[in-house]
Each structure stands twice: as C-alpha cells, then as structure tokens.
Image (cartoon, rainbow, N blue to C red; front, side, top):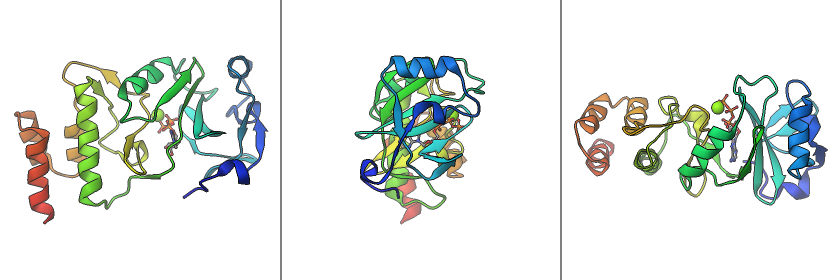
Length: 210
Ligand SMILES: Nc1ncnc2c1ncn2[C@@H]1O[C@H](COP(=O)(O)OP(=O)(O)OP(=O)(O)O)[C@@H](O)[C@H]1O
Ligand SMILES: [Mg+2]
C-alpha cells in the first residue's frame, strides 16, 4: 500500500512531464488554465522517469496532494473528452470517488488510499460490492465493466467503484447481474432479473458462504 503522506516522501514534477504517450499542447494549456502546474511523482506505476498512481487506455492518474488525484486524458485516447465520464462519476458519488472539478482533458477527484479487488474476497467485501452496484442502478447508471471488476473496484474503509468511461445512463441499468456473473452465480443473476431484491440475493449468498 502506498505511503499515507506522499507529500512528505515524493517530489513535484511539471504536469507536462506526465502528458502521455506524447506531448499535447491543448492538454497542457487546459491544465495550466485550471491551476494545475505540478503533481507528485508518487504511486506504484512507473511512467518514464516518474511515478503515477495508475495508467489505463484513456488516462494517467497522478497524485496532486491534499488527498486529491487527477486523471489526465491520454494524448492517444480514443475518447475526445472526459466530460461525460466526469458527469456520470459525479452522479455516482458516494459509490465513486468524489469529483472536485473536470474539463475536456482532466478529472480532479478524491484519492482512494486502498487496494484493488482480488479473486478471493471476504463475504463482507462481496456484499459491499453488490450494494454499491445496486446503488448505481438506483441512479440509472450502468457501469459496463463489472463482469471483470478487478481494476474498477477499490477497497479502503469502504468499497468504491471507479472508472466511468464506459458507463451509460439507462432506465433499466444492470450492475448487480454483472457482479453475480463474476461470482459465477448466474442462478442468482436470473433470480434478480426475475424480481428478487438485493436483500434476497444477499441472504442466499450468505447461506452458501456459511
Ligand atoms: N480516485 C482514485 N484513487 C486511487 N487510485 C485511482 C483513482 N482513480 C484511478 N485510480 C487508479 O488508476 C488506475 C487507472 O484509472 P482508470 O481506470 O480511471 O483509467 P483508464 O484509463 O480509464 O483505465 P482503463 O484502461 O482500465 O479504462 C485505476 O485502475 C486505479 O488503480
Ligand atoms: Mg477506463
């Protein structure tokens, strides 16, 4: 787990250094216009000479200090803008990390000091994830990436669902069935679709865990 006080142990780097994989003037200008000049070289992922919190297909996530991270749009990202992602993520709070501000090329959000979901989790974590998935459904958010949830779930004092870049808004949003199929409980997914409540599903899961 990373250090709890990264400000004390890591150095600052100019934000242009973590525009990836190639420099983009538009991205740098938007960051500077929004007061983001430097970030901390901190985290478990190496990016050239520097360290960052995370790296995906669409963004680089870096620590800003004060418990905040910034997801910077990759210069080669297939997505033109992070604005829709940021709006859906804001709606998803408190299941998602809180969004503080955003633009076409960045999302500034709460840093979750935790770990990723793993293959074998306690029943408490599983129940927490199912409830979080249900909370998104109540807000008509379908996450789309919860069948393989490892990289999209962070666990600290509670369960966070992150990365809303494929999420959509729809009347019958489905997330619980995705988590259940990850758990190889298609039987329960079927019951849920037929009208069983989340509490019914949790009760049945508890029986098979005990
Ligand atoms: N708020 C956060 N707090 C802590 N770590 C985070 C946070 N947001 C993202 N990360 C880390 O950064 C990684 C990349 O973030 P994210 O999944 O949003 O990027 P992405 O480019 O959309 O990834 P993908 O290629 O999976 O779509 C995450 O897997 C996670 O490890
Ligand atoms: Mg993504």
